Amino acid sequence: MMTGCRALLPGVFQLRHEGAALVAVLWIVVVLSILVGGMTLMARGELRTVQTQLDAVRMDMLMDGALRMAAQDLRETAGNCDEITIRHYVIGDTEVQVTVVPSSGLISLNTAPPKLLRLMFEVASGVDEYYAEELASSIVARRESDAGPLISVQALTELPGVSHQIYDKVRDLVSVVRRGEGLVDPRAAPLGVLRVLAGGDSGTAERIDADRHERAFADVSLDGLEAGLLSPATYSIYRLEVSLEDEGGVWLRTIWYSPGMELAGSRTWWPHAPTLRTDRVDTR
Image (cartoon, rainbow, N blue to C red; front, side, top):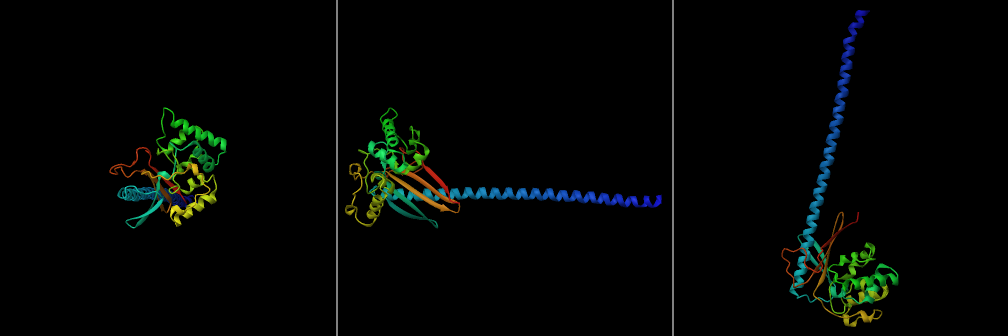
């Protein structure tokens, strides 16, 4: 009996040894699978990062090229552009749209009369009349102080009472170009500025915007706009806007340009607006 039991023991030990080895092998396989899976995910993440960077470089080159082509067009026409125009450029196999907005159609933070500044804040940002008056007074006080005029649109956020929410609602309506009495040329005014000039009447603004695209501007009725805030004038400083769409969203860039400036080697094309704004709006 004992002999029989002893005869079975080596087999039992062998089975246990083989079972432990099998478990060890399975653990090794699991660990290797995790490592390989992790490395694969890391590689995929790195590839996505590289692809995103390549997309950004491509978008940057396309936008920069289109803006330079639009700037060259303005140079060749000596900047004689007194209305908003949309220009299309083909770069490689991509069509890029550039919108040219004369500064004469925008509200000058540095020369606009207080009434126009108040209307802008009241209509565009939705604050009440009294708060709008305070904001307008803040701008006037700044430009008449020792600090001097605002050197960029973004400088609005440095003034008392101008929150980022208010800034976002007015930034596309303004410039820091100093011109005459700071009145607005309705030929070049974006729809948002027309709405300000109409005291918030969207119907009047939309009618004028539609009419000026369909007929000679001399035949467009400006009834409904604040006549005392209007003045046809041409200033050869322009806001150039470009947008491009990819799978992840829309890339936007805005620059300020004067046809008398050199383009070579400069990403900041107008010293009075030293920031080059590039935004990516995620649409996913």
